[in-house]
Image 1 (cartoon, rainbow, N blue to C red):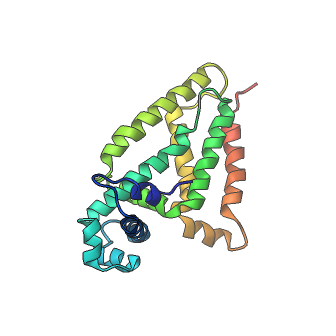
Image 2: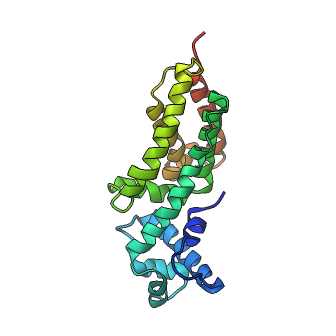
Image 3: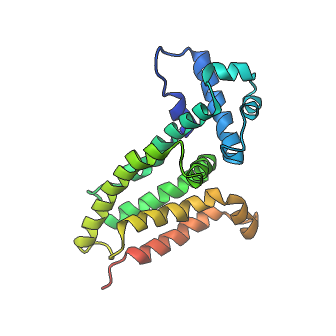
Length: 215
């Protein structure tokens, strides 16, 4: 699974970068992801990012002109990563299997990419000032496309009558919670329990019941 940093680092305009330039860009983006996910955009500074990256601030500014430029670059890379699990849902598959697989992919993303999840959540909580076009464009279009597929499954009697949009929203909230509120979840469950393994079993039961068509 490609990360937001890897995706963003590969998105460049103009002349090709040297190996060192690519490495430095990725180092800066990795450091910025750590800082932004911990402190949010407003609470983060270029000095913090430079320190985390092990680079001087002037060196950092050679690659990115501002804190906002770094943040936008990360969000751009994140959008591609974020949409991949939903893109994988196909109308040709078994409806319940497709939706359960989507839920598992989202839960695995929360396990493997908690910082990206918090970066996304922080941006949305601030009103998505640097990400609104992505929400209103690619994300909205894809959700509408998949909601139509789910509605077709419902109309064919293959799934229970649920609202397709709120079904997708519920999958987001019930999987991303384990990344965004990781400390809370682990504090309550204790160190001896694996929240993600337990969450998968619970969500399979929950969505299995929710989507089943009454006999």
